[in-house]
Image (cartoon, rainbow, N blue to C red; front, side, top):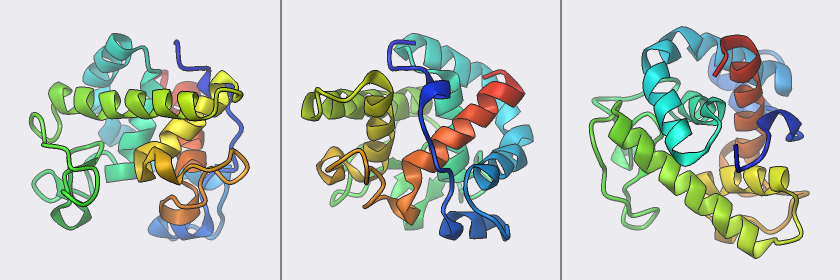
Length: 188
């Protein structure tokens, strides 16, 4: 894949705040892996769309699965496709708030069209991070792009604190750890 090898991205995994979503009494990579595992059976129904979209955009499908796990718990946290108090749409929680991402929802909440939109946004942010930090290696740019997917590229200031402004202060670290689990354990 042209955006780096997810298995080579360093990660500290989920914060304590994020791991509390599942009432886990631990955090870190182990917690991210457990949350990915909890979502794994629900994720299977989206596998073919995830794989097609990953191939179309050159993004590892495990990353798409991990974002779906983090954002909507494979659809389990959505209300008729909506999340974040009606500010985000679909499995990948595309921000439709005019004061946030300002995107217009595309497709049904669980459709390939929606996954294309979310993946296009991710690819856009990976490119923005690459331009902003040309000295970063490919895997660092990938991780920075994942963080920017959550909070915008203007909030990524350094690699050392890439998640400093993200939800739970762990977004990219948690998504990377979940993606590594999906790659190793579910063959995404």
